[in-house]
Each structure stands twice: as structure tokens, then as C-alpha cells.
Image 1 (cartoon, rainbow, N blue to C red):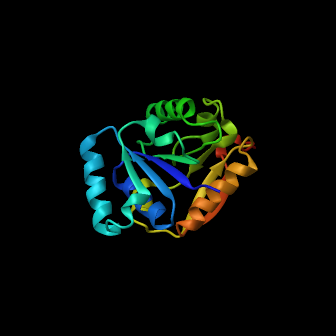
Image 2 (image 1 turned 120 degrees about the horizontal axis):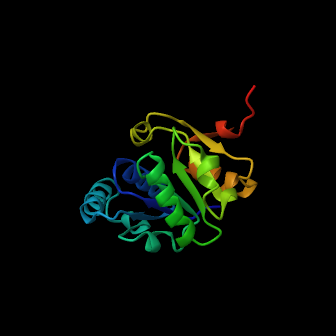
Image 3 (image 1 turned 120 degrees about the vertical axis):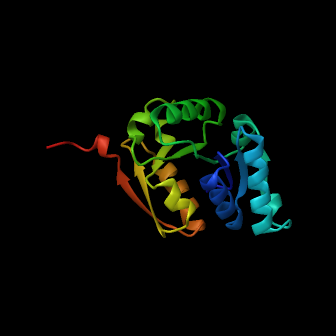
Length: 180
């Protein structure tokens, strides 16, 4: 099961995920290319977690440093095709082959995004609005899979969301469902 989680992007969603994962006992690597975002994230997490829990979180400035030992990577980049393709391309090439890639998207097909990687069986979509996740407004999380998503990927992602207090629900990517 996942022990090390890399979160790419230290905006509101990234901070919330880092906080939730650290509270659940995960080792967290929070990355952002903007040093000020990392600084603000560190201040915010220190205020909530206190210095004793902060060692569970490392703040890193490169994707390579974030994903090197990650079991699960969650990107927090904008839900736009170019942004998602770019980040998944980078993650796919830098993360170890065992690493699962999860991407929040409500508009894009995870089947199409996963097809652009060398690990489509390790890609999954988090079908939730970043704002609603960061606000902690829900207790259920919808995860979208493809016909290639492995059972191991589903189990790892399900365990992550359960440990941070959500009830995962799974659905097939609409792009793969037959049309009538």
C-alpha cells in the first residue's frame, strides 16, 4: 500500500492533500516550481500540524526530487489538456515504473491521458473539482478508471483515499463506454 505520496503543486488543493496525507501517516513530498508557493505551503502546514508532525512532509522544488521514491503521485495542475499532458509526460518519465499517477480532472478522459504514458495501467482520474476537495466538503470521492487500470492501482488509490477519510467509488471512463 502507499507510504510515500508526491503532490505536484502547492496551491490550495496541493496543501490540503499534503495536510490530509501527513495526518494519515503518509510520507509526503510537496513540489512546486514557485518558491513562494512552497514557502506559503510550509507556513500553512506548520501552523496546522506543528513542528512535531512536519517531518512527515518534505518541500521540494523539482518534480524529479518529488517522485523519486513515490508510490503515488497526485498532480494539482490546471484541468486543461495541455497542462495535464505535460505533467503526465514528465511524471511518466521521472517516476519509478511502480509509481501510480493520479490526476484530478472533471473534463478530460483518463483513457486518453493514460494512453499518452508508458504506464496506462497505473493511471487513474480523481473526478472531483479541486475547490470542493480542498474545502473538504465531501466524504465520497469518485475515481475514474480505464479498461487498462490494474487491480493493484485501484487497491493502492482506494487505500490512500480511505486513510485520509474518504469513501472511494469507482466508475469507468465515459470515453471508453460504448455509445448507443
